[in-house]
Length: 248
Image (cartoon, rainbow, N blue to C red):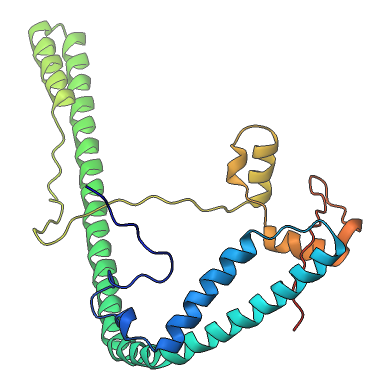
């Protein structure tokens, strides 16, 4: 069995549902696209070892730039109606979707606030129950001490046992956590850098990983472009690369 080889260039078919078929594009556009692929392939094999080759490659580079700009202009011309339609559809749905998102956030905050309030009351109830248990335990042990001082050993032992039972009694929170079959509660954790210098010192001292600090490359590159080879920042050096561009 032999498998047919695919021809290089623009392939027809396999497009996304609703997308225009390549075969329906204007012939002029398809020819230009095929020409662009050939030009790009030819350029990939160009080598420069002499001044004449440098000049020829420069001319080719300028030609590629112009051809690319022409293709980009044609693409924008063809996609402009699609972009306008997409913009209109997006704008139509923007307001109701944003309103729903705001409503969701509002209800989420409201539910979270209620949940936190119930949890706060539960903690207070638990703390009150623990305090009451400890107070009862202390009272019983005090009574046991007095009974022992009076020689009432049987009573003292009984009071000590009651104190032990009171101390071991489980604390049951009377406030139930809110729940719903339609929602779930997740505890999300995040970090807040409130002292950047302290973090930097911790990294420098090896107390925190270096990957917690990320160099601000846009700012550093801006300084490098301004200062060039006079750049002087500890741990940073100026790097230059050549880029030959077509004029125009």
